[in-house]
Length: 193
Image (cartoon, rainbow, N blue to C red; front, side, top):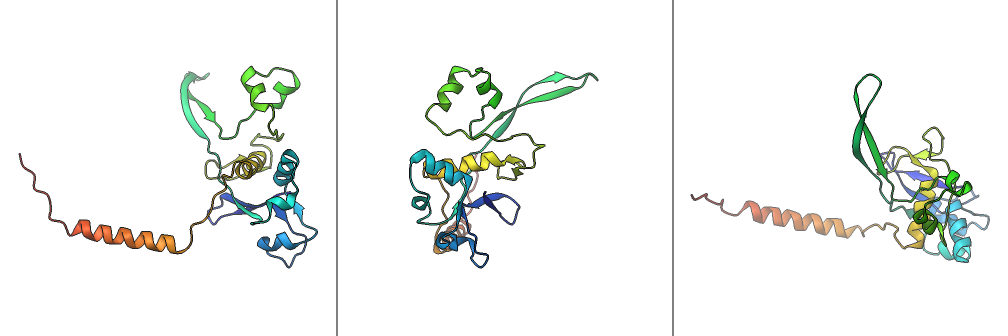
């Protein structure tokens, strides 16, 4: 169970790490619901660290997800049956992905096996055909398991996003306005040559 919260642009950047059972409660009040249910992410992290779930929800139940990004880069091209050049795309993921078949068949490379040792492994579909995908700031189709992995990573490594106090953007805006006015009032530079 996870309750992803889409922003106005449809991106998933927040999630509730516990879900309340009382329909009259707002998400930030789930902490007080005695029958609340922890998300899969929180339950896995709780088991991994040997801490009670309550230790993670003292501050808030809504996590601003700091998504580890992914990138795409062209890695050459191949010629298809019609003689057209088709680019080959290499993907780099912020959360390590290891195909489960490699684990089951003992086909892990040494680096992959070392990366799994002593860590947390989540198993889930990364196929775009699976319905468990959500838009993230880096891709239109982030697998749900990757969102869970980012939540665990954020809490475990203290990487969750935080919001600036409301006065900070106001002060920054005023500073930039004053700086802009100062630059505009300067005499233009004359080219010599």
